Amino acid sequence: MVPETPTFTIGVEEEYFVVDRSTRDLVPDLPEDLLAALSEPPVGMTSPEFIRSQIEIGTPVSKDVKELTEYLAEMRRFVSDTVAERGMAIIAASTHPFAVWGDQKYTDKARYRVLEQALQGVVRRLLICGMHVHVEIADEDLRIDLMNQVSYFLPHILAFSGSSPFWHGHDTGLKSYRPAVFRALPRTGIPDEFNGWADYQRHVDVLVKTGVIEDSTKLWWDIRPSARYPTLEMRSADTCTRYVDAITIAAVYQALLAVLYERRLQNQRWRVYSRMLIAENNWRAQRYGVDESLIDFGRGELVPMPELAEELIEMVSAQAVQLGSFDEVLRVREIIRDGTSADRQRNVRDAALADGASDREALCSVVDHLIAETQEGL
Image (cartoon, rainbow, N blue to C red; front, top):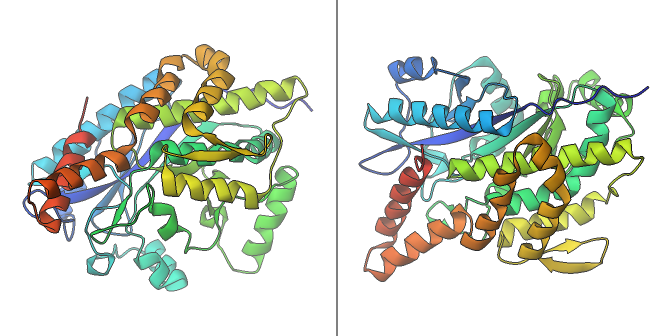
């Protein structure tokens, strides 16, 4: 049977930290009146998170990246303006520069209590934010086929998005520390290769029928078939501080899926490599961001990120033109040239230290930078 042609409609979920403008630390809690105000966005949806200093947004389903850009900007603007009325600000980054996970409060809801009971200290230390991109792939077998293939490119996406160099006031030496925290959970990382939807569902059923998980929402892989929507959900990216970088990530992911679908129509496939090899590239993306190289498994050698970025742009350019997202995809070059949020955060910290600031003052400068950059261009 020929699979239904995907629409490639797209949506984004982002998580933000809410900080006190005076202390630059995370707010201890979001007041009920603020949560009530945030619950009525002009578009899309918002929701509280397990940790009570975080807020999540979800854009409406967008017909293309241009519409997604408008929605994401409007939602960031709404959340930023709403918390600002109470002396707070949001930062779009995957870790806070100095907040301590043990100081946080947790949302008292049934589903979060179940999660905490199951995962204990592992979930309590998840003081991280992420970005998820949903692209509509209605046919279930096609969804699994494209998941198998596009997993190869998840390290590239992680490298482009790094925004979590600091943890508990220390420079981790990584461009993206978030995965190091998140990997403590079960059922994370790169998924196995599956031979279609039925094979995937058989594996899920083993965990559900034994009572290990309630449903497939408890699979927290870097990419997964959404349990709620007919989409393939990419979860490998850090939260991008600049919203235009988030749009670039979304555009690249959407275009990659379109390319792989087009190749399938021509009886071609991207080679599926082992989890071990992709995990090695994931580590290099975590550690070095866009500064170093990833392994090209076909060539059997390390290739610098600028060269990989150009190859990626060339690969998806025709589909990006058709999708109306070519300009957004081209912004990968700017990310390679200017670095990611992690690079800019380090630059701000280093400049403050050079001017005589203490370690804490320098990290407060990073928070100020993140506040400003989160709102840049809105």
